Each structure stands twice: as C-alpha cells, then as structure tokens.
Image: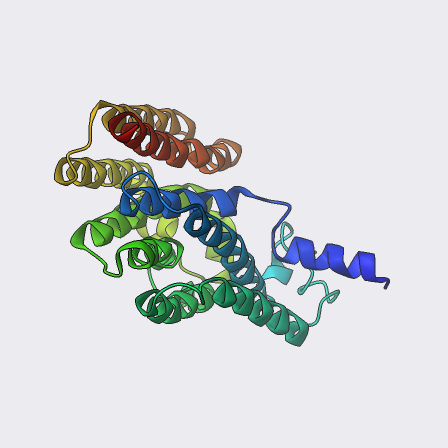
Length: 289
C-alpha cells in the first residue's frame, strides 16, 4: 500500500471526513473561551483550543475504533472501518492516537500550570470513554464530561482559575451531549441490543424521546442561569430562544423513532451549538464594542 492510500486510511480512522464530531466538541469549548475572555479572548487562545479540539477528537475516534474493533465486525455499517477490516493494525492505531494526544499537549505548553494540570484528566476521559459502553448504563453522560472538559481548561487558560460558572457550563454540556447522542443511539438501538453494549437509548427505553427533550430543557435552563449570573443581555437570550426552537424541531424528527430522522436530528445539533455561541458572541460584541 502506498503512502497516499495509508494516509487516507488514517484520515478515515480519525473521522476527518465526518466533521460533525469536531463541531459538537468545538461549540461548547468556544462558549467557554468567549465567556472566560469576557467576549474578547486572545486569538492565540482561540487558535490553541480550536486546533486542540480537532486533535483530541481525532485521537478519541482512533481509540474508539481500537476499543470496538471486535464489535464493529458484527455491524454492517462499521465492519469496513480501517482497524476492523485489518487495513490498519491495532498497535499502529495506538501510536497514531498517542501522537495526536502529544500534539494536543504540545499546543498547551505555553499556557499556565493549572491548564496543564487539567489536561491530565482531559486525556484520561477521552481515552477511557470508548470502554464505558461496556459498564455504564448511560455512557453518553461520560461522553459529555469528556467532550466538555475543554470548558474548565478554557477558563483556567485565561483566568488561572475555574469559577463555579465553568462547572455549570460543563453540566449544561453534559445534558446537551446526552440529548444529541441519545438521538444517535436511537439509530443504533438494534445493533447495541445485539452486541450487548449500553446506550442511553436502551436505558431510557420507551421514554427515550421524553428523555431527549428533558435534557434539552435542562441544558437551556442551566444556560439561562449562567446568563443571569453573568448579567448577559438580549442577544444572549435570543440565542437561547433560537436553540429552544431548534430543539423543538428535533422533537418533530425523533418522535416517530425513524432511523434516518433521528440521525438527521443528531447532525442538526451543530446549529443548536452555533445558536448558543452566536448569542454569547453578539452579546459581548454589542456590550463591549
């Protein structure tokens, strides 16, 4: 196999051809970067956290496929993934994941000591999440912590502290993650039953749609509380309102539990995250000039 073909396999293994995961990880990180920076974060901070998000999401995808290499062969949709198909060796994948994590760590070296300390649990969470599907009833909650750990790191990088609002923002992200990843899990429900792995869609059972909408409501309620604590203005709450309308649209997609519609709702969460960020950014822009 030539170099170009091998690099293409790595590209697919890192899911770089499917950017939705990057966006779902990036939006809450940007929420935190903008809030911690009082609407004017240093651009090198923005660049570090944006690139770090891409690298850590890629590393997480590689570890996920490594952990699921024996499960993926039993699912038509995943059996041709690079590791499962034998085109990339498991040890090779581990080296790739380690290299990506190292690059992400090198990015934050110029930042303060607290940010470096927080990078340790961040890497552990990203590496361990794929294995939680075997032992945690709602692995999506763990994913929310892993996907959201850039939030306290963003505050630490700019304030050299992690205030209570950062943990509220992380909690909001956990509920949001449960919402959108349950929509995704509703697509894979039959496969998860067959393979004997856990998912929120299986845990919630016939209350899955209700649970998804409840998690959206919890996310928005926590964001409203954050806005109240930070004395945010009208644009912030307009972003919240738009996100609420988006979540209501998702209800129309998932209520019949059709695979294609549930997957469409999952992908559409990019706009939920974008709406929240737009509200934050515009509010600070109009307030601070």
